[in-house]
Image 1 (cartoon, rainbow over the protein chains, first blue to last red):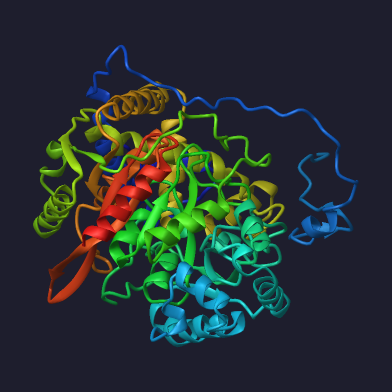
Image 2 (cartoon, each protein chain N blue to C red; image 1 turned 180 degrees about the horizontal axis):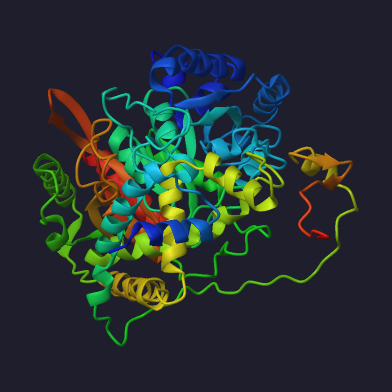
Length: 96
Length: 478
């Protein structure tokens, strides 16, 4: 059984706030989903017969880079706050 | 020609354009007029684009100059799911989080279609970030099923399915993570296909579950599904999971298909009686047409949905972590940087996205990862092996696409697990990465309404042509 406190903690880890009014419903949904997927607990998996996909860990060589600034204009246009081509965020280190 | 232009298939429209029975502009206008007339009722499109006159003229010139050598998709107006990027257009994934996000590049599938001369009518509604089976989880209103507007069109590609079924476009693109192309196709009476994992690039698809996602066609016929798939498939340096022809054994298509039927799974409770009857009758017709039915057993299948609802949320929680209100999308501001993240994510995501992010965070957390995520992943590999073994004795495996026909609005939205059970027959193809297709198998009557239902074929890896051939056999037999 998940508690409201568990759900609140998961939400904090996932950078989401769940309002107190919604917490009950989220906890009960969470419980019903977990109880459904918990059938995996009892599942005995056979020792053989597992097959992994053939395409794994695809790497590529570093090739020719594109010209500097080629995509900058389009990307910075999406920034919610900017200072020229810099993305502006709040100060995270305080001097107190 | 007696059919209105918007009701044509890709093949019919391509022929009509080459025979000068209509122009590209007339075809575009017919689709756009139909969309403008019906969209207020259906809400299949979130946005209809202004006509791109240059692209329309270029397509016409190419057809005039090249005739039959022009690509089949040249001049064909398509609808595109709102999680595929078209440069310069909004791609919101039907979420408040990306309501203002303008795509900075073309998805590879969009680029390929542009190169082929295809046209884009608009972006279609969906469940937020492709999470849902009814399009009720869109932040911009539900889409209605053209077969019965009191019912859902399925999801998450519900807008694309409704647009094709109501002839508001010639064909559409969707994405399928657990059934999101095939289930809405079944509920709206059209063809929908999830190709072999890796056959189609996902570059420019807003990621949901990256080991499961595939882009695929929603079309009026199997022939159209093949044409659209041909146009979008192929290796892509921008998606390292794309496959080449050599990745899997080549699969030949026999004249008489051997169709595996997992009877034990279909006879379980929860499968609608009328739908089961349509399934049995369709199989009988296939047998009468010379195809061979064999029983197959897939003992791991009853656990597939549970494994899926561990693996998928795990990947969702990782993929949606990038949406934090910093570089693009919804950006709320509080007193601290942490508050900026919290407010942006809390306001931007809808309830279902939040549920799955929390579930994914849980199954990946220390102390639970072995019991949930690693167990599910191991079950997935067993399932893969089990299907591979079953395909030693048959060419395709048949299921009904869904356990029941389209349901009414609100019927399942209060119970997440009931909604998840919609995907019980479709998720295995995503877990195994095998190609699968849904094709109409007639209809059932429910509450005085005739509702379409679909039959589903899974084929071995790289056997996309087998899946298409089985679907074509159903079209021919009906």
